[in-house]
Image 1 (cartoon, helix red, strand yellow):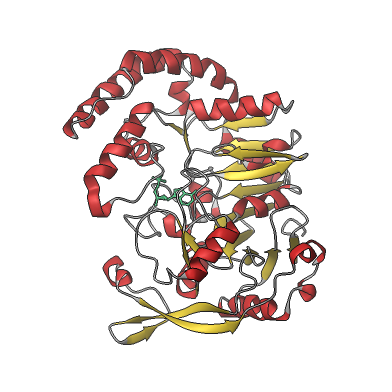
Image 2: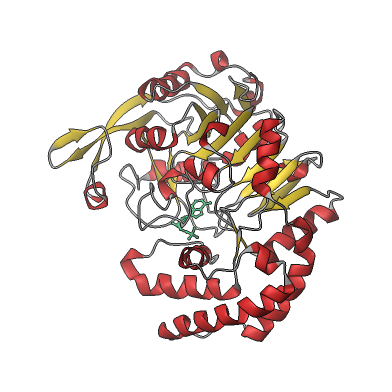
Amino acid sequence: MAGVVIVGAQWGDEGKGKVVDHYAKEADVIVRYCGGANAGHTVVHAGKKYKFNLLPSGVLYPQKTNILGNGTVIEPEKLLAELAELEEAGISPTLFISPKAHVVLPIHKDLDAAEEEHKGARAAGTTKRGIGPAYSDKAARFGLRFEDFCDPVALREKLPKLLALKEKVLAVYGKKPTQAASETLQQYLSYSQECAKYLADASLLLNEALSKKKNVLFEGAQATMLDIDHGFYPYCTSSNTSAGGACTGSGVGPCAISEVVGVVKAYTSRVGEGPVPSEIFDSTAEKIRERGGEFGTVTRRPRRIGWLDLVTLRYSKMVNGLTGIAFTRVDTLSSIEAVKICVAYEFEGKKIEHMPLTSAQFSICKPIYREFSGWEDLGEGWASCNSFAKLPKNARAYLEFISKELSTPIYFVGIGPSREHAIVLKDVFKK
Ligand code: IMP
C-alpha cells in the first residue's frame, strides 16, 4: 500500500503541479483533499497547456481515478468549465466527488469581498473565490453539501433558506448580492443535473484502492503556512492544507500515508497579506519575480519575493512529518552572485531557530542570514542536467545544506518548466 501526500512546504505556489504531475504517472488514484478554486496549477499535456483551479492533476490520464474529497469546496460553474475544456480536447476523465464536499455559491464570493473590505489591516488578501465564507458555512453546519446540491428536492429546500440568511449578512456590510436568489436556484438546479453523475463515496473508493495495494496520491493545494490551524492566522486560507488534512479531507486513516513530500521552492514567494520575515524588496527580488513569472495564477497579483526561510521550513517539516523534499525553481535562482538562506530569526535580541510562540511574536522576528555563492544559469543546458551530480556545484551545496538542516532527503529537483526539467532521486511509489 502506498499513500503519498504532496504538500506545499511554504506559502504556496511552490510549483506543486510539476511534482504532482511527475509522481501522478505512477499513481492509480489522485485525490484533492482541501481548498477549492483558489488553487491554480498548469499542466502541459500533448503540447497543450491546461490551467486547473479545481480538478485534480490526474484528469489528463483517463485511466486514472480522480477524486475531489470531502475537504474541498466546489464551485460548480468552475468545475463544469474545466470539464468542458477537457471534453473539447477529447478527454473524458474518471472523476468522483465526495457527497461531503461543500458547494461554493455566488453569494460566498460577494461575502468574501465584503468581509475583506471590512477587515482592513486584517484582510488576508484572499482570491475572492468565496473560499472563507463557504468553509464558514460548513463549520456553522448550514453549508450546502455536494449531496444536497445533487438532489433537486434537497436543493430546492435548503438553498433558498441559506441564501436568505446570507443576504441578511451581506446587508450588514451594506452590500447586495450580485445575483438574485431565484436566479442562483435555477442556475444551481441546472448545474446539479450535470454534476450529479460524479457523486461517489470517495472515502470508500480510496480505502478499497489502498487495500488493493493501489498507489494513491494525495494532492495538496495551497501550502503549510496557509493552513487554517498551522499557517499564519489570519493571513491564511480556510482549510487544513497541511499533510494531516489529507486524512480528514479524504476519509482515510493516518496509517494510509507512507510518504509526505514537501515541495520547497528554492526561494520564498507569497501572494496575499501577512508577515514574511525573509521578504526582500531590492532589485534581486525584481529579478527573481520577472525570471520566475511570479504573478498569481488565480489573481495575477505580483508575488512577494524573499530568501528561503529555514525557520518556517523546520516548522513545516514538523507539522507535516515530511519524509522527503521536492525542490523547485533551482534554475530561476541561478545567475545571482550571492544567495541567502534565513537560518534563524532574531527575536527580542535573541537568536531563535524555531517559530516563536505567538503570531504577534512572529510578526516582529527579523531574519538572520547565511550567504552562499550563487550558481550559473545553464540556459538550454538545464534540460540535459539529468542527475544531481550534474547540477552546478554551488547549487548542490545550497540544496544539500537545506536537506541536512531539515534532516530530510532530497527526492526531486525541478530545474525548469517542462517535464524533462526534473531530477528524480526517489520514486515515491516504489516499495
Ligand atoms: P483564500 O484561500 O482565497 O481565502 O485566500 C486566503 C489566503 O491564501 C490569501 O493570502 C491568498 O493569497 C492565499 N492563497 C489561497 N490560495 C492560494 C494558492 O493557491 N497559492 C498561494 N496563495 C494562496
